[in-house]
Amino acid sequence: MKYILLVLCLGLSTLPLEAQKQMPAYQLFNAKGKKVTYGKMLKALQQQNIILFGEYHNNAIAHWLQLELTRDLGKQQALVLGAEMFEADNQVPLNQYLAGEIDAKGLDTLARLWPNYKTDYAPLVNLAKERGWPFIATNIPRRFASMVSQEGWSALDSLSAQEKTWVAPLPIAYDPELPGYVAMIEMMGGHGGETFPMAQASKDATMAHFILAGFQQDRPFIHYNGAYHSDNFEGILWYLQRQRPDLKYATITTVTQADLSRLDAENIQRADFILVVDEDMTPTY
Image (cartoon, rainbow, N blue to C red; front, side, top):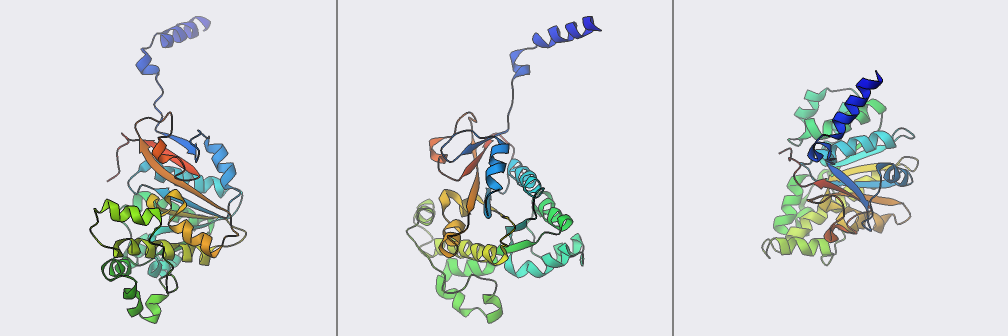
């Protein structure tokens, strides 16, 4: 037996270096660009009231980490979950599904689910259902955001009383000089006009509003959203801190890089924790 083990060890030691090379798919960093372990991030997040997990919608690693992190945070205490991917007027069918009153097919019929819902968000919703946790539909109905993009804030004044319950209270605070909103106009090459970032702000404000409406003091709230909605401590977080500066917040963002050994300068201070995924990772769509 000892001879067999020796032969196996010697055989492994002669494998080409390429066969022995580690191939990490991701690396975690803190805001300053220092590598952190998953365990250290988890410990820090356990102390927070509200966590914003910024994702790339088509990144499998981000979706996997969202599920793992939610499971681990939920081992010690009950949670509240919420997501950009559900619009506020879909809260009723979402609640019905969580309560077992309708099945997955019924939810698909009654709610406007994203095309990647089954693979990327259903696991989170089902986890909430299994644990008896609330899951909050936080986003402004897309059609209302489109109205703001075309007409500006005045478009929301025409909503009915019922429709206004699915939007952050009017008038919505707005700072067009926030770097994220300024960058949106720059990315559009100046096209789209000043109303384009207003639509983004209508989403950020509404998500913040429903996060706080669903927040419970004794339960951390984890919110899943596109990275741009919380990058650089702006977007949703800007609205949250305006209304509840007393709460403890943490942000996570997702980026892709060719080199996982260090954090690129452009990604430093993008969030409290930065999930760096290998840029060769195959997108899900």
